[in-house]
Length: 169
Image (cartoon, rainbow, N blue to C red):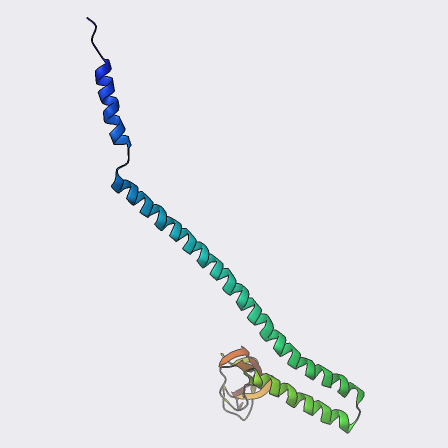
């Protein structure tokens, strides 16, 4: 009573082979997936390289912008050194010329002084260091202890000011 079991195993093996073999459509999908994945990886790497390159270029531009500004300021330093050797009226005149040169350099770079005296106190532009009675209207800037500066339209240093309390009665 021995049964022939070789045929069913062979037929199962034959059935298993076609199921394991990828169909042409599946192979095409896998190839398309691999191509798209490779393109995605390359694009991500290219973008990462671009981001790093832009960061380096920004650092270089900032450095060279500061370098140009520093070279202009060296002219002011040279004039201070010459003024140290002068005396009397020549010293006063030299210091005034240096101040004008320095103001010109700052203006060329978009840095300008803020006017404060006799204007209403503005906490975004002024830092009150004293609040004193005076003949001026309350809340008016009556003295400027340290000048404030703007670069373009942005305040880069607030002016330190004395603000009026109004007249005391």
